[in-house]
Image (cartoon, rainbow, N blue to C red; front, side, top):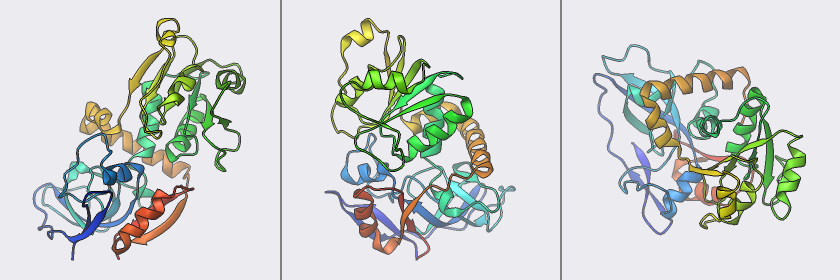
Length: 315
């Protein structure tokens, strides 16, 4: 039985029987899926608010990990039982047949629950910092500081000697020292940076928050917009561009990865897996729910709170 969760419009999903995968041939790999989180991108896709159109007959699930069940004759570096992370979408299902290039092999002993959450947030943070152009001794500012992406930004920035100034819309237990967004943010951010120039801003909120974040930047600063939590268009004073040299860039993970090519993406994940193994962050998990209770898991994920909701795809 290959059950899968599909969108059915109006913010709802349905559990359906998906076609059973065929025997792998050539470079194909048959994967028995283990875990898949409910990512914010999945919630947007269910509501019809995602940035890109997604097929209505394809299973949901932006992230997921599983165990190799069988491989085609051209696959020499994987064998049954190996843990793999899936690069593509469609992971809320029991079995997948995929080309080898769409899988990242993970080291033996890697926690499969943590592996399921490795696909989006770590590379997003990694590439945001790369696109921000910050150097050791600089500072950056980010809103949505209680998010998992923000956690990874702090992790990677610390290794680069880049100071992170965190901003939240309301107090969050994961970031007790974060600044509350609102009036006077620029002055408070300057003090929090410890004298380091704030070269870049990472904005996942948009709306009026964009202007407040941009006002914190040193001349010639760069703002990267990668989220729309407010649901509103960005607002920025034109003087910040004409007089302050501000540049605003949009960022989305998968187009950024496409520009890197297959080899670049695999090299990045090899680096991320090594960093994860050297210092496992153990990202918090709120609940693990059987795929048969998908609507319950999605409803729980919509309530927010700390940690991810994951589906157990083996049940």
